[in-house]
Length: 493
Image 1 (cartoon, rainbow, N blue to C red):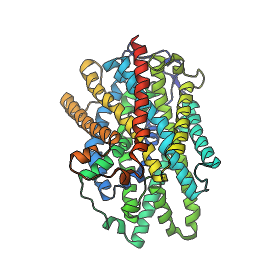
Image 2 (image 1 turned 90 degrees about the vertical axis):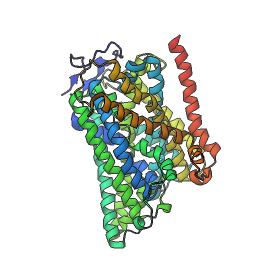
Image 3 (image 1 turned 45 degrees about the vertical axis):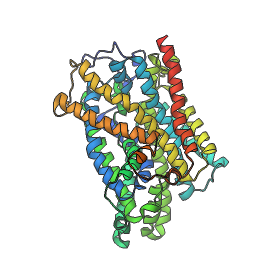
Image 4 (image 1 turned 45 degrees about the horizontal axis):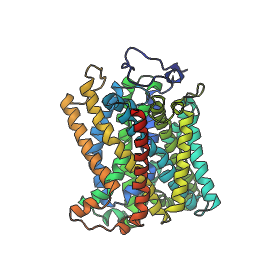
């Protein structure tokens, strides 16, 4: 049984946040649901192989960033999410800190990450797995396009149906994700005991500047996003108590679900043979040989489950990010206010869901037609576009948390970062420093390498020309800035 998401006395005053659609929302999310939504959305099985391409250093840097980025990141977002649990999450936080115009600009980048990710690395990763282990579709064929379009719109459909039903699909996806990761990891360990852990002995773990610059953007991308469920804050039963606990649990699960499979991949596959697009499933294909005649059917079943996990990963992000962007639209911050409408029966932002579906479709068609590199190169480029837009949005979201703490000290904070205001600001500055470096490296790869005296070959690193890369990365950012510029002038007018 659900409750209407009406305003209560223990929730901060809504006079500075959009309220037009609150009446259509219902409180459906329990603590377990929030954890599952975070796990389904944030743990990117599509990025595991990409992280593993860094070799032994990937293990080192994953541990370092889990401790020095993920921990302070989780602390500051847990405090803010519990104190400001309104529908819209980051949009409301930035608006309260810096105003509607800045909030509209920021959430544009945050939101677009997800249809770009859905139409990019998620659909490309699923297609690669299906091609290799289920049924060969080819590249650029009718079957290739059909698979990608069905994948995208099934993910959108999951976001469109009511949250009371849609959440169960993401919960199943979260459970399946953890199961797949553990199954491949455990099987890799069994395989390693039988055949030796040659991969772990043949790689180096010493951290280097070049290794960090190669891995920083994707690791930061992989370890961020745990505030996303706050976009459905008015649909949580008890956000003040559940948000901090949920972020802590999902962040811990995420750290394990990245580190363990990366170790498993590198244990049995030489680092120079790992590819981002197929690294995880290639490892599964190798280690499932330990099951003899059962290996083939198990691998096919795992590939199907892998595709389902990627689909629910996309739908989980659509559920939360489309709500945030719908609240921005309802507040006049994203073109027509009609895009902010929540369906009166479903309680979902159907129009915004459709915009996301169309955006994802356009991006995947463009990437399929124009990138024209190897499958691994295509995957890396489309993943980098999503990495770039998300990290750029955090350049505003993270300092907004500190501004809110200063501007609204009277707000009750059920959870506080250890160390009070000083502890909060230290954590915030540490997180922000990582984000600045990651954003720069993602947008302008190779520039810091040259500055620090590191050799760098763009073609060798990316598998395609710098012009093609910049068409999709810088090109996407330029288009977004143009859209934001037009919208900003209208808002000020």
